[in-house]
Length: 364
Ligand SMILES: Nc1ncnc2c1ncn2[C@@H]1O[C@H](COP(=O)(O)OP(=O)(O)O)[C@@H](O)[C@H]1O
Ligand SMILES: [Mg+2]
Image (cartoon, rainbow, N blue to C red; front, side):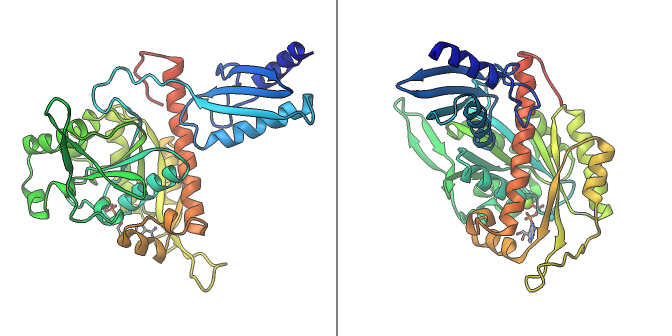
């Protein structure tokens, strides 16, 4: 019986559809093994990574499908990630996905979004690093409670000095702020920047990471362009506030990423509205409404969601613990987690294209 049942289960699983990618498990070559041993159905699925968000729903839909053909039989489903081709890149070879967080102008909450995105990914079980490349206003040291930090260096077995990022809440953090003071930022020039850059990207021992979140300096000048060209990014998330002046800067960011062929994973509208703590049924659109969604639609880019203006989020950032960690169950965290799940889905779409077209340069 077991052989036939194994085949039936395989067939059923092969017809399931990946919720992020809209493709069947068959097309995705996801069903690696189905065996029945000691009365237990054991299934091995291999999905396009990162699987941190999708694994739960994939396991559940598989268990439900199996339950229909083999009701009541104990089932064990393991969901792993497919080996990912990083194109032989030399920079950060052990980092699977590099996601830049960008904005057309400062003060829109780019760093707040970057730190919370990193924290939400980490809570979901991913290994995460944050690289604060903002030379003008590096704020990740504050947001992760690492102000005044510097890199620890040790000698490896060959006597070469190696340095490590700092760590906070289980997230690795490196910042231009650990290298520069504010006065240096004003006078920094290309060649100097290249040195700092090389330290953060090539000399620091980041180890294996599922995600490196890269907090870019605001704007679309030479420095941003150089950074986007040098770093092999999976894609970029653009942060804006709703008002028109901020949105018009977003158009410039979009143009910059398109020029250098970096995928834009989507647009996040931050400080979108305010819910008074004592009137939670009310939403006030302080900076206007719908600007982020409008620019996303007109540019054919995904709109990832709206983050409300929220006092606890500001306090959490200032206090060194991202709100998604500090108040895991709160509304603000829920909103940010939903946005993070959408970012991950976009990253998976990017990785699907690489898997389908190895050795091809892509843009989604
Ligand atoms: N949704 C939000 N609600 C409340 N405060 C926020 C929100 N987003 C950002 N902030 C705060 O606004 C300030 C500017 O945000 P920041 O992330 O530093 O901006 P940027 O990196 O774009 O310059 C910070 O004090 C941050 O904590
Ligand atoms: Mg910032």
